[in-house]
Image (cartoon, rainbow, N blue to C red; front, side, top):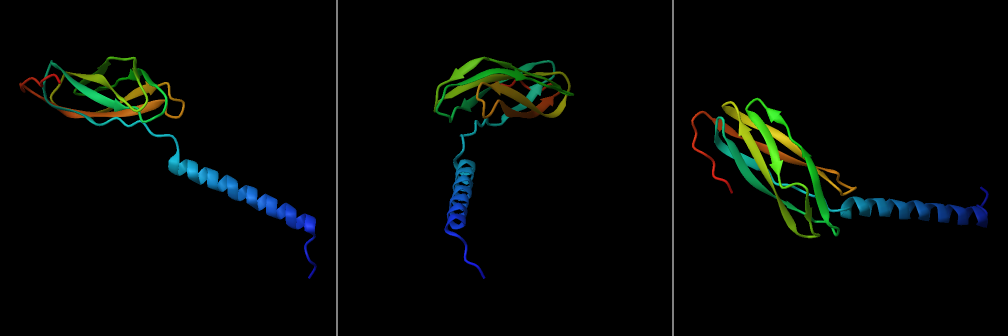
Length: 145
């Protein structure tokens, strides 16, 4: 069997070293990539029909740059419609900001929906906010927080 030439050995060494370096970079990025913006669940309980309930939701900015929540897409369900107040809002790095979620109840029953919050963060342009609750016929008003 012929021995590999010095040139071929050098090329293969450089090639596989480069492949290894790229693999380590991608693996490290997947483990320690940019921090994800997470919004907690927004839950309404016993909203009276034909009333609007409010809940404040805290959004934490885990990134090293200011985060701007610039808008939202708010859905309607069979029980009513969601909306937001307080946008746009800028959240400094490592700090928290609040957004108010409103739900106008139109019919009794449980509901579950999702609000899309739009950000100026290129790694995470949409943050999904889960909203759920119950609309009760003749229920007592939910306190504003």
